[in-house]
Structures are given as structure tokens and as C-alpha cells.
Length: 551
Ligand SMILES: Cc1cc2nc3c(=O)[nH]c(=O)nc-3n(C[C@H](O)[C@H](O)[C@H](O)COP(=O)(O)OP(=O)(O)OC[C@H]3O[C@@H](n4cnc5c(N)ncnc54)[C@H](O)[C@@H]3O)c2cc1C
Image 1: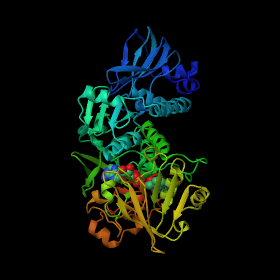
Image 2: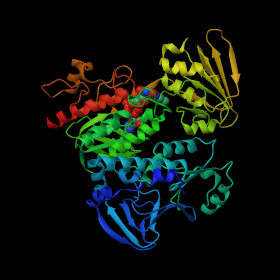
Image 3: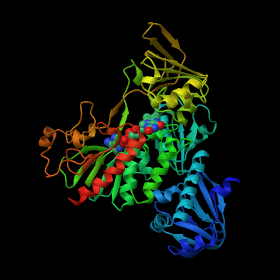
Image 4: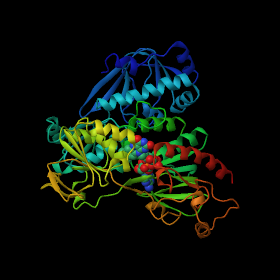
């Protein structure tokens, strides 16, 4: 149950004028004591303002139900799932006879799109409620897993980055686990297991299965031709969705993992305009995702673009796992991903000691232990600063001779101030050791002196080099020698001849060698690898999408 002052923040009361404006788009209706307003997992729920009586919000747990809060007159129900159109993570029932104002999701979207005061209040409250549910592990899922399992970390990352509240029970340390495993007939080899809505059991689920069960991938409509399909929901894809949807285009975004892309894994972004105190990547992504949904953009999570058909009008993007989507115009915003390292045996420890992101989840796994971070760019610097808050000591291993070659000055200064960080330049890892599945020791060598050192380190963060996510494009668009997508003036006469460029005009600045197919953000050749540039390019791209749609 939320306590004051949380209560006032999470359950603000509407004033008369606000209730009257909402009433214009909804209907008054009576509710009876114990009437279920919606069940947890209901695919489409209404938004309610309580006029009289009270409503109890409940969380399903295996074999029982827990009360989260009781809401009274002038308070309103719901959280971000109402905006996203995702199934409800909690349930609600009337505690007594009363009266409510009920609005369908479409009517609620109309309110937040047209009433700035209510938009601010409702969206802020919905985001805060979701943050509360996540922080308190209250929701419709219980994950039973092990801290030594890569699959457990994968599922935890997937749920967390998609803003799904869940309770985590560790098989090695939580005494409630045994009872639960017996009740659901789960064997140790079935772990990690996800219990959804207190009933359904998923054994070692893939991200695709999880997304399906939580309704995150249901936006795909067979046969529909969208104005714009965006592939990738990093900063570029999210910005494109916001600008396109707010200008009335029908936009669908495909995302393999979670909204936010690389930026979503950043512990603190300090250089994005308008956030003087910095903002976590996860929060920036959650806000942008909510903003895009508010304007009506549709998202299909855990649905990857697997192949692009080269024929335009419409473009066909085949999906991994089957199916396809069609688009009059499309935006390649699939970004980059960390290169897998050439350290011998590294694959063995992926997810059980070797990580490519430093978020709260990984920091929790590290506890007070000593850790190592490999890389000399800003992402590695952020990881060092973040991990140094909780780890006993952070070793930063850099191949170059100084951080100044590759890192922003503000981060170098932060690192220099940290007493528990050692920067080791001209250093590279030569061996990873561990007798079981978990990393136990790391050996590195200083290239200048030839000296080697082995330390008992169980957690290693690899943040080195990134490759563009362009394999799915097949041969349809021209790539530069590193695999980034060529656009605009970078396209040679040869590229255009090969594609049989059909228009009298030349390609627009962010257009590929196929008309109406654009690229923005880190995946684009020559782009500046920054959040602001990805967002800016995507915004500019939507102007060009309008022009292409008219051709
Ligand atoms: C840890 C870290 C910290 C950073 N900190 C900063 C910072 O402080 N300031 C700053 O300006 N920049 C920072 N950056 C860089 C910044 O995050 C990137 O420049 C930015 O995220 C690029 O955005 P993007 O949308 O082009 O690509 P990405 O962020 O790479 O997003 C691409 C998205 O596409 C998805 N995708 C890939 N292939 C497919 C497919 N086939 N189908 C569907 N989806 C697909 C991916 O899952 C991903 O979500 C940081 C990067 C990292 C890794």
C-alpha cells in the first residue's frame, strides 16, 4: 500500500473543472459492491474517475491476491498501460456501491492529446505509478531464477527495460521458492520460470514468448500498409515515432528488445539538452515511449525486421519468426550493437560474469565486489562512474595510452575524482578463468611493460567497438566499408545506377538508394554517434517522409 507522501503523488485528486472536462468524453455509470472493473491481464481496459464510493486495486500472486491501494472520490485509475494499450498488470474492483466516469482508451488518448493540463497530470501520474509498481515488485509476474544463469539475466533485463513490474525470487537465496516450485511442478532444470498472473507458467521463455504473453507485440495487423514503418526503437526510432504520429501519420515501430536502444542502457546521460542534472537512459526511453504512444504510434516489441524486400510501393519487411509488415515509407533506425570480443573463451561467461550493459540489474549482481570495465569511450566511462558507487573497486582497462583520446572531458574529470577506480591504459585482457559457468578470474597484460596480472574478478563489462545492425537489409541498400547505411550525397552514381534510381530528383539527405527508404541515427554512415544527433536526424527525416509520401 502506498504511504503518504507517495499517496498524494500517486493518487492526486481532480478538481471540479478537470472532472467536468473528462466527463465530456466519458459516461457516468453506477458500480455495485464487489463488481470487477477489470481483471488483471484484460487486453483493453477503460479509464475511470471515481465520483462516489471506492475502488480497490489488486495484484495477483500465486494462489492469492494482494491489495495495492484503495482509491476514493475524485481519484482516477490506470497507469501507462492504458496509453500503450497493453493488458493490465493489476486488477480493480468496487469496494462499495458508487458511481464512476468511464472512458474508453481512445477517449482517454483524445484527452491527453488535446488538454495540456490533464495530459501533464495524467501522464506524470501514470509514469509515477509504473515506477512505484516496478520499485516494489508489484505486478502480474513472478520470475524464479538463479543469479548464476545467463537466461535469468536475459529475462530480468527484458522485463526491466520494457518497464514490466515483476517479483524476482532467487532459487539460491529465497526460501519462498521451494513452495512455489512444488505448487507449479517446476523442476530445477526448468528454471528460469516465469509465473504470469498467478497462474500461467512459462519455462525458460524466450523474449518473443514473454512479449506475446504480456501483449507487447500485438500491434501487427495483417495486410495493413502503414505510412511509415520504423525498424528500431532507440532514440532515432522513438523520435521518428513521436514526430510522425503527432503529425497524423500511421506509424508502426518494430523493436527486437526494448525501447531506448543503447541509450536505454545508460545509467546517466549528462549531455542531452534540457536535463541539467542528467537523466537515466531508462527514464528517457520510458518518457519517449509514452509520448509516442500518446500520439498513437504503434509498437511491436520482440518483433525484429529479418529481411527487407527491395521493391518499393509498398516496402515489405519480413519479420523474424514469420509474418511481414508493409510500408509506403520506411526508416532504418536499427543502430549498432557491441562487437563480441576476441578474448579467448568469452562466450562461456556471457551473462554469467561478462556483460555489455551496466544497469541497476548488473550492479546488483556485482554487490560490493571488485569489477573490471573494458573500453575507453563514453559508454565505458559512464559504466565506471556508475559501478564505482557500489563496487569495492573498478579497474578500467583501456587499450590506448590515455582516456583523452576517446572520452569526453566531463567524464574523465568524474573518473579522476573517484578513489576506488584505477585506470589502466595500454592494457588488454589475455585470459578469463572459471571452473564452472561463472567467471572467477581475469588476467590482463600491460602492452608497454609486458607485465601480466591476474585478479579474482567475477564481473567484467565489455564496452568496446560497435557494429551496425544491418545484416537484415540483405543487399537492398548501399553500405559503406564498415557496414553502415549510405544516404544522400554519400551515395555514388554507381550505387544509384545499381538500384536503378527511378526519380528525376536525387536522393534526399537521409534517403538510401531506394526512394522513400530512409536511415537515421547510429546505423547511418557518417552520423555522429550521439542521442541528440539520432533524435535530430529522425525529426528531420519525418519532413522528408511527408514529401516521399506525396510522390
Ligand atoms: C552505455 C551507453 C551510454 C551512452 N551514453 C550516451 C550519452 O550520455 N550521450 C549521448 O549523446 N550518447 C550516448 N550513447 C550513445 C547513444 O546511446 C547512441 O548514439 C544512440 O542510442 C543511437 O540511437 P539509435 O536510435 O540510432 O540506435 P540504438 O540506440 O542503437 O537503437 C537501435 C535499436 O534498434 C533495435 N534493432 C536492431 N536491429 C533491429 C531489427 N532488425 N529489428 C527491430 N529492431 C532492431 C535495437 O534493439 C535497438 O533498440 C551511449 C551509448 C551507450 C551504449
